[in-house]
Length: 315
Length: 290
Picture 1 (cartoon, each protein chain N blue to C red):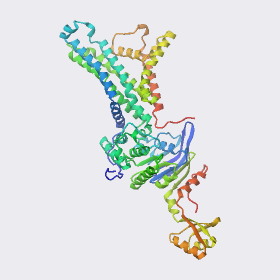
Picture 2 (picture 1 turned 90 degrees about the horizontal axis):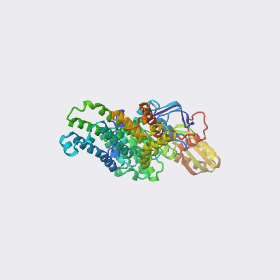
Picture 3 (picture 1 turned 30 degrees about the vertical axis):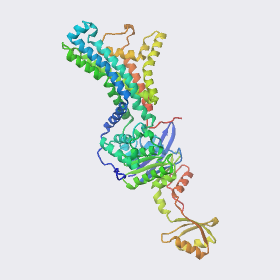
Picture 4 (picture 1 turned 120 degrees about the horizontal axis):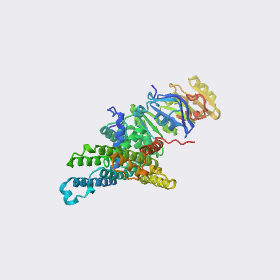
């Protein structure tokens, strides 16, 4: 069973098509929802939560129909909205307890979980302060705490690092990683920041102008490109490439002495230097490719409508 | 997710049933409303007339007091008119309390944009409003039909003659009349608070919604030489409804009396308008058209 299944999902708001026939299945533990501003990320989340009615098609969250099983979906989901959303007049612990009770926890358990989740996100010391007095980072964290307090099966985070300074952002990313590592909860993380998704997610859905531009498993992409390297060389690179191919590498030469290679596990960086010495060429720069998500995103942004692409990197 | 371990643990305990979720909203709404000293002050103020009326009932039923203090003055006869005036006083004090409490129930949620987080939990928009409505109804009940019926019970207890059975219509009238009013007030209070968002302005707007149409109705009556403008006059409509429910003598010029159907229609229209406002404003997400 997929975490999220989309079946020709179309959503119209104010007479405008915002989501246009989305179809796909997401199974990852931490699913990234990427796209430029206005791509329909928040609309998709709102539709999954039952805030917007699909004009046609449908969506399923944890196997439940987004149209007919709204209450059961909301019971299983924790949601951290993008914008400020809290009751500023309440203390942190009271707010989180209130939300946990609304999610169905009995009052005593809700209070216990509220304390625990506030300590977990790092707001233990300020939990009795009114939320109005919190900094922006603390407000983001209290939203995360209320999303966690009732122990949901799916946690939806809409732009969790919005407006955070680097330290607070790192703290938020660490928390998300911690939750993912714990493993009992799936996550859907919406962001327009590639880095956030890259650091936290194992699967990504890229939206562009209300359509799916790409669905990709980042972990598999990372695995398949673990041995992909780029080099800048001085000398006769063709001879080097031929020798590397003889050793079992896929190798290609480009203008300006650039060489790209996919190395088998048996070949190490030392073998590169030895081969280069044998061929009389100098390796001036060597770089292991790590930016697979950026490649996926850029390729997806070039995509214009039509068939959904399951994007993979060029070899 | 133990406090000392600072790690996450899933929740596997029991969950409350869905129908209890509006009660959570009602409980937190009540707590929010009663956290203000002004609410407590208004509540005490609203119960003061009941204390005075309790003394009047005692005096009216005590032969020695009647002889010594009242000297047979018929002003203190406990009848339909007495209970009508009690109900009127309490119901108008309920308006004051509503204008203070209703904005506190809704405005905080709206001004801090909490609706999307509240409604992302397993509670519908109807459930949300029901919770707030229950909080308001409960608060208003304690100053309207509950003390009025307590007064009725006390009168039945201290009356020398069998009184309660002969005046059962009075008890039913008090309950129905007060219930109609507090339901209408709650809807108006929630709708205005949802529309205005600013608490202080919402407080004034609730009074305005009740009294401004009365002025407009008066102008319409004067210009068009009709009585139908009275349908916009909430105090007149409600007093007439209470008078008929309690079986008290008519206070209006017979020419200006309004038919029951017209008054019921006016209340239904007011209710529908409030529901429309709430339907438009109480949403997790606002959709910008165009």
